Length: 503
Image: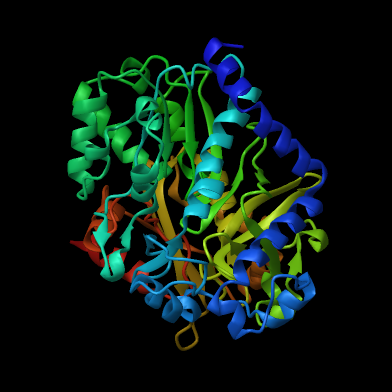
């Protein structure tokens, strides 16, 4: 084990023991989190509204507190932003993470309490270091600096004295001083609001630094890394940063980008670690890099519930961790030390293991195609894009898909808008493998495609280079936690892209 990793693992040995405890006794730890959250909740107007006390049972909590989304909580959040106290969480909330989400155009303001910062977001970051150092003792990942590409919004002071901004900006402002010794870029550069200006500033500042790890959303980091090669004239990133060893990523699936990163960083020592960190909290991390799943973190001040996606119309079907099953697509519901109570975050997950509890993200509750009963989710799309790319030597930069609705006697279908880093050797073959893979992973899609009963062969539109970038730029969603919607049940996004592609 390297000296740096030995020090990291030693420093976090107590946390590693705590992680092992909730791996072995998950429900006991979750119930402890529930009791702690109830003690805080009982001090709030929200609990008094539903006549709930600190010593309620889990069953009473589920019966009395409704499952909500942002729209239902927005009136309370607006009051908190205006300076009112004890609404969703005891005391005053000073920070709000500004998030548009994947499918919403307007901004959401997620409360970020001191407890959520310390016991959830920062604990998650520290656990990433501890778990990785323990499992990869020879890695040089923490022997230099970690380059973090965060959000691009200013921190805006709101009425009542609260501040809002991207979660990454909030974390930078509240991070312990020692973090600045191991992180790049500087706070001044990290908080530049214009994404393109920030990328240029990072290239000037960090091209001569010893960067050994980087973190962020794969798509936006790819933009930064390609610009770094242009700026330095290097052939790959190892010529700029020879000891680059780790990419901590999240926000979107890494599958479409994996091959591009392998080309950028041709090193057998390079490791890729997925995390599930959102504005609402830090929920999971990849503790075994040879497997796709992530360990659900159970002692971060979050109480989990899961509602089968096929039962979204019936909130009484939500279950706790004790009753989840493998192979079921669940909408995740969280109660957190940020004052979110039975909040449906919008992500869907599937359990890959129940001992310990491990998940993989399968999509979004509002990001799917089900215009004809085919129930295509992001997990299906990722598998199909990966198979089609492998079969044709393609590399996909970005993609989105939407229905082609029936008109007259015409049957329905799907239209895929794909921007390629490397074009397929055979476009027809790419579409064929895409279609057949979707049939293999989704029986509903296969039934609709059988003899073209309801759905015809997908059609492919090849996006011009930079089409997605120009689209996100037009929507003022460059950088940060902004994501390209992979699937939509209507044509709004796709038609916008087709318009931009035609310019």
